[in-house]
Length: 268
Image (cartoon, rainbow, N blue to C red; front, side, top):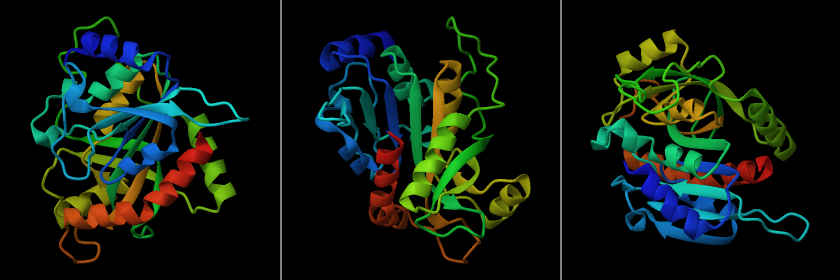
């Protein structure tokens, strides 16, 4: 990952320092619609930047502002599409959006994902505020790190409490029933077995997915504040007895994406 080259290219293209970045999960790319005066560039046209091959990821970086009092500022970045460990990317590529956002001066990052519900009180279409995570991806994105930042990053407050409070307040105002819980990250690409889901439930996980954890770790190393939101697109293996299907993930994302968009607009 050629971070310096990528950052230099985007600084010229964007022209201003973004304040907040969003990394969007499967089927949630439409959330770039929160931007006014939006401009975009495909990942393939960004020097040194990877591209995802997963269906439901648009591979598009957008930037723009949110209108307030008649004024629109170019202050937000939206990464529609992320990179997954299971695609064969190494962790420097998986976390490329975070490193690039940090290089552009971003101080706050919002990570969203599509997740399987482990908590039996959840249902498809629910939004879960991530309060903590469990790293079961088999590796850590800071392994082998040789830059100037410390690799011994504290994770006691991985997800920012003030941002979480704003999300809760926004959901309450919109009358969206925001769930709260712990996200477990697996490497994928196969879905978990019912036995693994039973294990995760005993470990205290409420939802499971194949992303977000490495991005959050690197964001914390970069000194960024993190807000994490999971869209529960299906119940995890063994909860309902049904076989899991990625098309179900995309279908639920499309149906519930408007609710996630409404919440993000309010938070912003």
